[in-house]
Length: 75
Image (cartoon, rainbow, N blue to C red):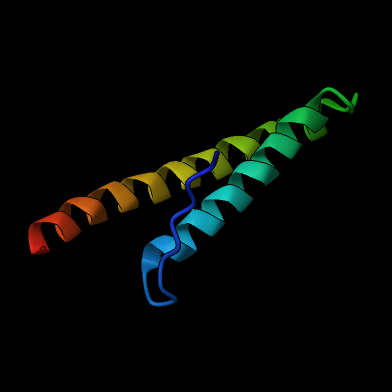
């Protein structure tokens, strides 16, 4: 059973969670497609795309972790 937390529209976690899922999906798609193309430049582009998107997703993770610590201190 999945426990989904619903955040308010003004809560940044609502938006970061959605964007993280989208970034992960596109990164996975890019990694998967690397093996489907023969052009080394296209492969490099797909790999770079995936790495950048996963790096951005990590930034969202760190933002959420910092935010959780701040929210815990405030309550």
